Length: 180
Image (tube, helix red, strand yellow):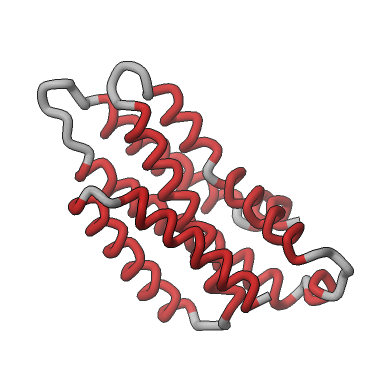
């Protein structure tokens, strides 16, 4: 339902975010050489693309809060709903995953590629779980997104991105259980 909504009512925004995200990811990572291997700037740009994905999630949450109230009343176990959300976020990041998979052998290392994917995935799950836990206006949500991406960028600078992404994933699970 959420995918159909995005493809019908937000196709240009989705296309623009995907074009920016995959294009900039490809351009930034293609220039990496073994002699000058630094992904901090690439991750910063990738965070901006994730910020755009957060806008898509906000629109999906608005749809769910206004037109899909009946969906919460269905007798579906909470774990299945979280799997559906995880699958939705995975589909949302699929083009970036394919771009990273295509670039993994020559320009970037497998561990860095996995950290890009895992961090983006955990951030999207956390953002949607936050939207489920509390309703907030768009400006507060955007401020929260910027804070989260700032924390993630500190994780990149401090080389503890995977640990921070795992923490975000666990927080998303707790918020989803509490907020749904």
